[in-house]
Amino acid sequence: MKKKLFIFISVFLFFVYSNVVTEDDKILQYEDFDLSTEALINLIKNGLAGDVFDGIYVFNYYAYSVCDIYKGNEWTEFLAEEDFEFFQWKLSRILINLKENQYSKTRSLYWIFLAAKNGDRNAKISIERENLKLESSYSALLVEDICNKKDSMLSDYEIKILIDYALRGGKKEAHRLYEYYQNYMYNETKAIYWLRIGAQNFNDLSQYEYGKYLLGTKDENNNIRGSFWIKKAAKNGNVRAKELLKKLEEDEDSVILISQIKTFNLETEELINLIKKALGGNIEAGMRVNNYYALSVFDYTEELKWIEFLAEANLPSSQYTMGYYLNYDNKGTEYEKARSLYWIFLAAKNGEECSQNIIKDKNLKLESFYPALEENIYKKENDKISDYEIEVLIDYALRGGKKEAYRLYEYYKDYKKDETEAIYWLRIGAQNMSEKCQYEYGKYLLASEDEYKKIRGKFWVKKTANNGNEAAKKLLKEIGENEE
Image 1 (cartoon, rainbow, N blue to C red):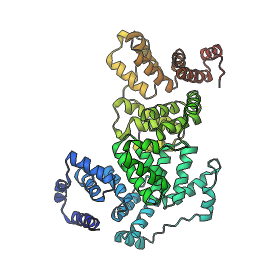
Image 2 (tube, rainbow, N blue to C red; image 1 turned 90 degrees about the vertical axis):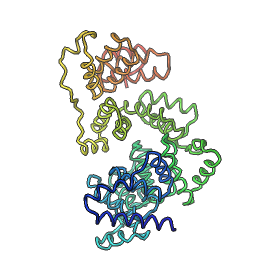
Image 3 (cartoon, one colour; image 1 turned 30 degrees about the horizontal axis):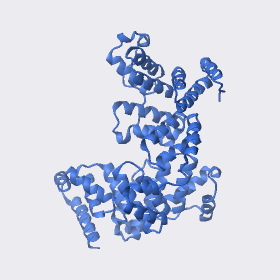
Image 4 (spheres, rainbow, N blue to C red; image 1 turned 45 degrees about the vertical axis):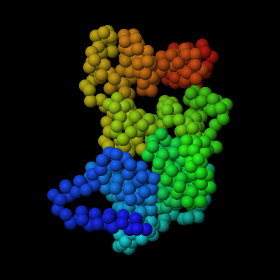
């Protein structure tokens, strides 16, 4: 109790002080919150584990030392999740100002009412002054019926109702949205968003599932936060969370074994059959394989590989995820950033909402900043192509250029004699929907002695045949396959 009181006083004094100092004084304040790298790392770990006091230090560092608004807001949410009423109120104020987020105003109500319930005076005053109401305008009886419906029977209107209830604190509604986006829409990004909302809403099942999801990543900080949510779920009576905590105390490496869910776990024979179907283009099978690697055995490398397979099969959510991973936190290389844009724009073209919003909000452009290439570059002798021209070809190919990708394939195959690089650009061209690249890449895979590669080769040849390529149609007949 003394620790919590000290935290509140220290934060309160800081905000009072910051409101009365001069502008010149404010510039000098950063020194009070500056941290060494080692100290910051340790405080972050403790803060993510649930130590509010250390979390405050991290928040102050990001908000008032380095003035990183994004990180400051991120830690506001972490501290709100740790039941600190001051930050629950602060988070509500942040959300109310996020005009570009259609859900933020409704979610702000949840946090301000929770802060008031926990005794925050500012929240109580705001609720009374603004005459705020947390209750939804939609009928509770209607929601009960919606939650019991099958995914395929839910209308857009009913999803809208579930969203409204979940944002206002609905436990089962948030978890229902997680199931809907995870198992029916195959949109992992949205599924995890609603899983976290459910965890924040004190749904013990959502807390357990979200904690397990974070434990399954290869990021140490995510793992620490995962343990925090598992502990919360256990305190809320979740039996599986209690069992997992016992197991973690015995052997911290055994979390993978305990966290396997029947929904995602697969027997060897079933996994092999699903892989074969998925490599042939079956999206449902591909999603099950992806979920197995992502949420059962937590193999990050395999997960990424299957996201790319699904993106190639034209699944918009996976195309968005590819773009997200390639330039995570804007830390991708120049090549990764260019390729990220290709996938984001392709996902948006295919109707993926997150991609469409990102393009609009960030004013993204897919076009290359290089001037258009002279047509003779595609006919030039390989030894006549300059390094600058190769750089331009690469930029164009990564942004979706078909003939540029094929030209790079020819260059690396015939001139540089680098098969690995040549096949890389051949696959890029196939992903860019170059009929020529798809056909050649399919033929390359079919020539392999690996059964899985042969199956994937048929997938690409069929794609080309479906686009009217006569050579591909002929090849399919030769290997006894039909166009599908």
